[in-house]
Image (cartoon, rainbow, N blue to C red; front, side, top):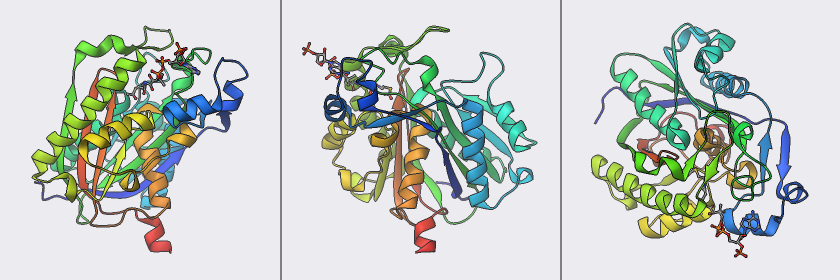
Length: 317
Ligand code: ACO
């Protein structure tokens, strides 16, 4: 589909220091480690930090791994649901911290934001830019009520980032972006308030959105499920992933997960999981990799990439 290439030159991740385990949550809420693990697959989540601070740390790690400096970045795209301020966006602060001299904008597409960013990055590369920094960063503790049994067990903070560059034999083979504003009020927050969620309806709509978006991206790429080597889904609830996989035909063995450690980190969850998967050496150049985001809005976003670039364990083994 594209001739210019799409290479993950480097990925980086950042998590704040404070870890909140299920057992610690159960000291202040009527719940248990067993219930949370069984219903969600989550064991802990990180709290603290700022969105711009975590984004800067993850982006700096990605740039170091890609061996590039601030002058090499042509565009900064920052996906976040939890900006530092109502005004301005958070991307200019991150650009300032990193010493970038380029365009910098926020993407608000909830948990789908980072995958939206990859598709936008591809567009910038097609327009002649060489290197795009795509960051997902969240401080969801600022809009989560940790006494609410529905949402308090799910969400945490973190950031992940990738330097995407031209060349290198990688490409976006297919993609799909979507939104359905009918579902705004199944997961939303008023200005200054904490999140409200209809958990059962989010579960149902998420499974449908994953299935629909994965199939749309496969169609656009002219591929089938059997052509996909590896999948990294948004990390919301392992049961959502299992239910969608049952319908699609993917296996958990070919799936990258980091949910147990981090909980749901919204726009940061896919790059955080990818960073772990790369540490484990589970993706190599030439693999066909699907990344699927879904979340509030509802929004959804899928890319299928022929992987090229950051393959750290493969090269250091
Ligand atoms: N601990 C212990 N018991 C609980 C808890 C809890 N944290 N929460 C609810 N319960 C109890 C309820 O009181 C109820 O008890 P009862 O049967 O005696 O009345 C029982 O457990 C079942 O409650 P439900 O609300 O029906 O629980 P459900 O199985 O739906 O699980 C959950 C709740 C985990 C929130 C689930 O609905 C879910 O994961 N939904 C998806 C949410 C999600 O992923 N949101 C992120 C979305 S954004 C995005 O990333 C897509």
